[in-house]
Image 1 (cartoon, rainbow, N blue to C red):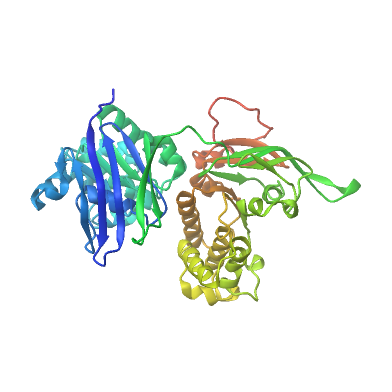
Image 2: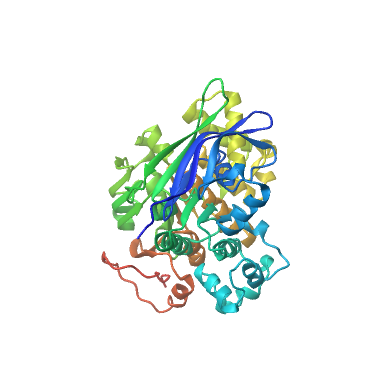
Length: 507
């Protein structure tokens, strides 16, 4: 039974920098006990600033101009420093964007959690670690922070926040560093805490799938032009909706190579649905049709039968016959960016081409957009004048991603984006794709031979064998899938209402 009582109230909040730049204007929201509210919006619109205002800790260069923030009936900015610290320690749990930076690297996980828990008893700490899905049996409680992954650090920080038994929980990008399975488990935990204990939860999030699964209410922060102010933020409240319609729908898709009597079929009656913000991994042996599927979807290898629809509208099989908007809506990140990027063109020219064709912007606006795109993929403005041969493999792949993003697509197709990269660079590219997927609500298709990588970063897995879909399943437990691959005979699966298991790799 959910309690109905406001735990957090914010109204007419205006926050500026010391130079009078408006960061947040008119920000208002209300979070009841037992309710989960999500803050969404593009990076830089003020989500983190709004969260920090609730704990009464604003960045040093900012100041509160007007408005009020109430937590459990108390005006945060009218409290003394001692009272604010007591409120944060006993009533509010806060997990920031980079929780690892707030964890003492010299302390073990058990000590980090115990120092905030109501009881320092070993069983109490173990219960908190188990609550946030940390593997106690693997000895994680005795590890120090540098020995943890980013996702594990985030869950330790969440355990510390829950150890206080707070009335209000504030989360900034709670799904960062988590695979889809773990993200869903943490979402279900937060939902359970809100429903059963009346915890009020406010989270800032780019992850569309998490918001859809978890939130009762969504508040969108939007930056809009407003004279004479440079920019303002408007909060628009919408109720949580059901699962959205697929952004990409593929039905009975078949494709051939060759002509006439020598033609051979490489795809057979393939179906695929892809929702906004979701990722589907495509795996299979070489020659199973993975790359052909991507090329057929984008229109570079016209299908011989079947349909492809984007946002419900069927598109032509050939890219040459698609409209400009239809071409922009689906973009491809190829396997080898060195071959895909023109060696005689600079990074600026490579990325500016889709900007100039699709947006017809001025030169100054193009440069500003180029810098923004490079920043999004982790490159600096200095890379604009570089040629492909002057970049590392990882940098070329980032340029290739930036060029695809320049068209502002709804669907991003990635063909073996990490196959030619070392493991460290590959991880950084996958982290980049995960972040972009969340920030832009991109629908992503990832082709790879690496089942573990696909299982970690995708919501569903489609297994191809000789051009047919032999399995489609939730991405779970990749180790079990790999161990079960040997000697497995695959047959085309029938649609079933039961929850699928992890597919084994085709032999």
